[in-house]
Image (cartoon, rainbow, N blue to C red; front, side, top):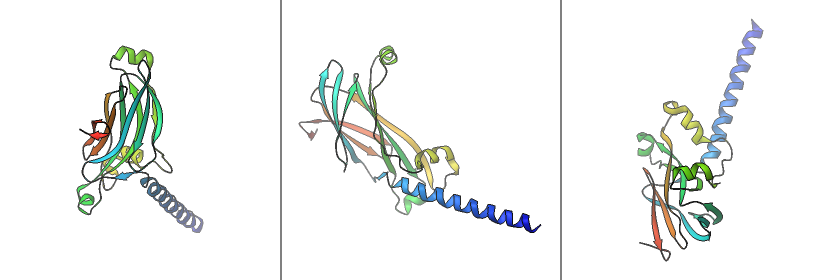
Length: 183
């Protein structure tokens, strides 16, 4: 009987330590996300043709250094991960969070997209436990999280084109820039 009591005590202690470890690692991962309150710029994209339907893209995420990638296709697509809090956390001042996820090229024609595939580049740094993936799996069981979802925007690629991508509480918006100035 004493051995069984000791077993339960150690099991409970181990489970408690494991739970704190998951919470701690999830807390570290949440620092890889950015806060926004209204509409906020998240990135600019500049395109230079390399050949037919091939573009050198310079993406500059807000507050970060630029990254150069190559995309193939007719359009570019930027995806983000979003975490929206429940009303009571929003009332306490918690803003929704976002994290850039990936940048990819896409073809307008579906048959061409199937035969040629996509060029994709990962933009996030998922260090630690992926809080977004956990929130999506937990669904309504995740305390304080109203929704964890993805949002995308896509527009045509073209030599010399530039775009500013912004995020709002509902998702991404993109606007073409003319000469580096918002239209």
